[in-house]
Length: 202
Image (cartoon, rainbow, N blue to C red; front, top):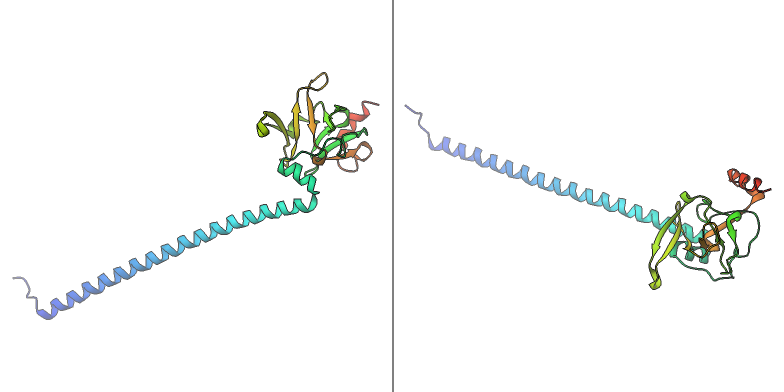
């Protein structure tokens, strides 16, 4: 014969079930709040990292603006072009190499420089193909081949097919994107390996 359930015992069971349900609801609410807080924290971290990256890029750009002249920044970072016959190296005939004004990466040699009559420093080839990047430039309604420095991604100039033999190519560069290192300073400035180029021409 099954035990008799008294009214008092039934009330106790109902209270236990009610307390259990309330406890489960409290746990569920706590989990929801915790999950939301963690998600918000993650978003804040992502925002902080993104903000830090932006600040880093801005700091780098700010540093370049301080280090470069207005024309150097305009040419290298804004793809500008300096005036012909009114730039530093178009008529430079000294022996040495031309390096990236930003990174110091070797780009051209005076041994490959020639007088193109254009008013910009012109070369038949770079000192090393690996140091430059060529890109298609379709600005101003024309299609040209742009030349950029590989390490700093600085705009250097353009390539034309009106150069002398044997390449028939003219690397028309902006003086503002270059820094000239004379042959007598190559070793002192860390470009010793390029001395051999000039010693072989003696």
